[in-house]
Image (cartoon, rainbow, N blue to C red; front, top):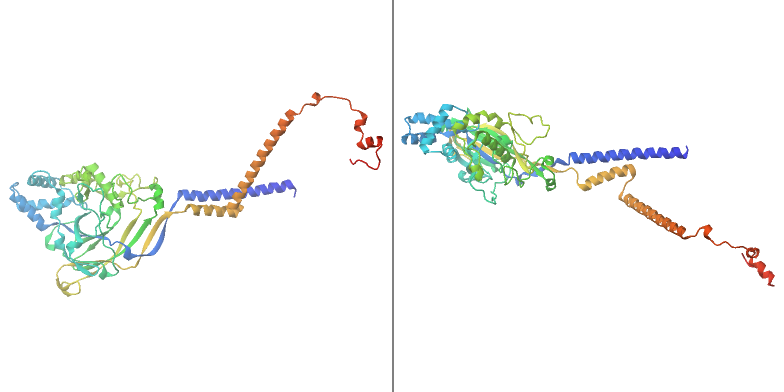
Amino acid sequence: MSTDVTRIFWVIIHFLIISVLVFMVYSLYKEFMTTPLITSMETDSYRTTTLNFPGISICSINRISRQSATELATDIFNANITDQSVDEIHNLVMQLGNLYSSTFRMNASLDIEIDQLLMAYYKGPYDVTELMKNLTPQCSMILLKCKLHGTFRNCSNLFEFRKTQDGYCCTFNYARESDDILELPDVIESIPVHHVDDLGIERGLTVVMDPLLDDYFYSILPIVGWKVLVFNPTDYPDMTSGGVTELLAMPLSETYVDVTTTAFVSTQIIKDFPREKRNCIFDDEETMYKEKKYTYSDCIVDCKVYNIQKVCGCRPFFYPRRGKREYAQRICNNQDLSCLSKYKSKWLTIFPHEDTGHIFRNEKNALHCQICYPACNDLNYDVLSWKSYMTSGGYNTNLLWNYNVTDEGVLHVYFSKYGTIRLKQDVAFYWYELMSDIGGICGVFIGFSFISVVELLYFFALLFRDLLTKELTLQEDDNQEDEIPSVQAQTIRAIYWKELLPRSWHSAKYGKGLTNRARY
């Protein structure tokens, strides 16, 4: 094989190797740029006892107390502002139940009538929030016994009467500021929460509840009992956010709720990526709805309330009001039910942040909350529940010692597994990992290393020096050539023959010995 053919062959081989090398490095870099973040399971045995106990809301299926409705009807009748009887006013009060989001039912004539009646009774605009709060069955009547971490506790010390998606409910471990705040403080103090102290039914939360069957007046479901909400303690309990689990508890039954969790954490380094890349928001970032701590549930609720306010000009009474802007918004009354019922399905179908090519991006009969991303650090609660039925009569158990059960129900909320899953979102490659991968690929194909880089730089430095030195030498030679006179300019003289003879010949002529020859 000739030398030229060999050179061409090796040039082709080197070209192919370098081409494959460039393609693989580009593919690696493109993968890093398109999917810079990765979510992986950090551990499946994260200690459960380090987690927060979930928030628990117990809501009676009966949303208006018969006793409270009767008292209101009697007060209105005694005010002599109408010719209607107590029973007729009593029936009108039932229309207030339509203000719950689970119903939003409308009866135009009755809605106008009850609103005008209440306006006359309160002599002007009335506080719908306070009115509905007073009509709701109270926690002091529903909760009979409470036990937390194996110790009997006063239920009024554990539960608060707080707003939920179903109105006012008896809520445990809700770590949020008050539902109605006119002015938010500059620094909101953190509210202590209960943690998972131990595992097992006896080490969780146990509540004995009274259904108050004789007090039923307005049910949101065609059953009796309680709706139980399990949610993150830092979130407002709203089903549309996806962070709330609902279950039903019945009279004369023990409802067991075994809670499991999935923790999601993100490293601080991903905060430098745009939200569209990381698809989450840290709790200290600002959004257009809130300037305080961010939660995904609050963002969805704020988006929904913003749309309700925009479309119907009011906000439902069961949503919290925090700050002057929210506090100044009018609370929906019965005359707003025509608008609320019209768009009810839209507010129950919510799409958070969506990609450009999302299939439901152009869905009109839905609410699009584009700025709502999941929280970068979150805790999701899942439940597994079952029931065991009770019989009425006397009980002598640790919980129901010398207690006569008629129609009470018992709720157990607890953790049974020691370990929980912890997911971690981090960068797919750190800079040194990306450099290592690229270096490994280059090393496989062309034996690339940092020593090779140093040698290459050294080679180019020498080459540059030589080129620079050669250029200077050429310039000096050019200058010298300019100084040497031309042949025509030199003096021409005669050359004699004797000038061409060696010196030894001159020595011999003037008598010097022939033995002393000169060397030349």
